[in-house]
Each structure stands twice: as C-alpha cells, then as structure tokens.
Image (tube, rainbow, N blue to C red; front, side):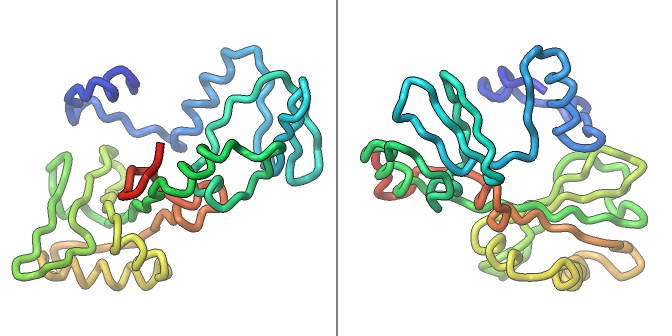
Length: 217
C-alpha cells in the first residue's frame, strides 16, 4: 500500500493487489505496535470542550480524557447529525460548510461462489445491459484470493440506497436473477452475499464526501 502512489495516481498492476487477511485493521494494529503512544479502542467521544487551556473529551460511558491537543478525523455523517457536542460550538463558517458538503453512499456486495464463473480472469468485470437505462450492478472486482471465489460488486447512488433497504437474503435473490441475464444456471453457483451498509453505520453514516451544488468554503 502506498499513499504516495495513490496521490500521484500511479497505475497499480493487478499482480500488486494483496488481500489483507482479517481486513485493514490488522495492518493498522501492526503499525501501532511500533508506536509508544497509548491507543484506546471501542470508545465513542460525545463531547469536546475547547473552552479552557486543557481540552476535555467525554465519552459515551462518561469517561473523561484531558489533553493539550486534539487531531480530529470525524466522519462528515457524524458532524452533520451533531452527534458530538462542541464547547464552544464550531465557528459559523465551519457549520455552514459541514451542512453544505455532500455525503455520498457507496457500498459493496461481497458475493461468494462455489466455483469462479470467471475462470482465471483477473481484475474487473463490467455488466452491460442493452436497452436498460438503469443498471443496479454495473461493475465488480474479482477478489485476488484463489482459495475463496469472491466477487465484489460496487453499487452507488440510487442503487446503493435501494439495496440498503433490502436484507441480504433479498439481495441474494435479486443479484441471482441479475446474473441469470448473463449466465446459464449451470455456469455459476452463488452461495451467499453480504452488503456493506455504510449509510447505516453509526460510526460513519456515509461513505464519502463531495462538493455538491451550493457547497460553501
């Protein structure tokens, strides 16, 4: 993983993609082991008092932490819902900007198959529907782990909102019917699906921010 490559938009070869067992958290835990700082997990801050020389943070279970500096990376969805109380309140220009920035939703559907219908193919699969103005499942990525036949379907916008109201069982049926438009029943065996639901996650309430019409500096 390279932040420099991401910023400079360097091309990443498919062979460079490395699945992280257990998710990205394992990578961060390894990095944290080299730090001398104390890390506190599973702790939700609900109030930040900036009124004095010492900053006071209060958590959901009423624990108090005091510090001289705070580096904040609070998701936009949390700020827009005013789930953290600031004292004094954030400056008015900040509040206007927070309210005007768009908070988008992009989810992924992790689909496992008994056997890979894509064979030895790597990378992306585009699903093109002729004569349809709307495609809920436009693109998917073949997860680079040969032992587990995983297809990651990307959904955003209208499709992401629509799927967010459905159970995984309903999505399974819907996606299975969608695949039948491209493949015969004997060509694939969909086992299960799992949708990320970032718009419902109480720690994010969204996936990404963007400049929408009317966004203020």
